[in-house]
Image (tube, rainbow, N blue to C red; front, top):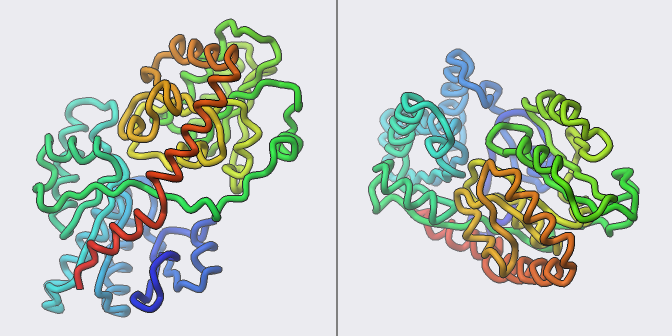
Length: 355
């Protein structure tokens, strides 16, 4: 929204809560409407409230384009959009949905996967175009007949280097209370099952080529206590540390010597783009669209998901080879700047707004 040319667009944003993202939108001078019924978990009463809040907002603002992100918002907002079109006969309204990874790609019981596929197909019926943030998501959408080919388009996530003000390594370490002389393996992500942090903790049990190593996992979420228990059970309290709810966590990226993304499921993760931009060597699991960012051996290392021994081996490989770390870090930064620019993403997205 902040990147849209004001001469052509008058942007407005609706979302749940008043978090950091909402404050950034407001500070940019963009009207922000809080949808009080929006929440991550399914709650029929809250979802109905959100449906009517969005419907009311559509009548109030009379948009020419509606662009929705996230699966939960996609379903609720899509239903509101359909009713709005029927009540106003405004079938010229352009609608776009961005799927940041498909939930049916997550490890689940078969009945849950089937149910999620059904609701994904239903959600996509509400929209003119479906943006897949990776080629992987595009192919799985086609394979599972989530939406017809004419609706689907690939637009990779993009970032603006000038938006990032990474702290220098020494300053970041002091702020995080990490000794300057330690070798720091770091990760940033929500504390959820899909992010696979437990496998990074299990990897930390392995023997490493140096003794002054530490692991730092920054995030927030439902699995925090489970991860803390795992660290304690493995007697890793002096080696593995969690930081919860750190504002602007990515500005501390340069504190890390290696960045690790141990996810079980991804779309096209922004945090990998940010780690690459920060000039870090990357180790990531080969899931979702990760391989569209990381070319193993060229600008990072790819490992199998849920395999702590393989992950530990990749960490050891980079510990013993500083030249390789530098080579991979330079390759990652070059690829991010070349292939994942915000301007490219914005231009491709604007082209979908048919009005």
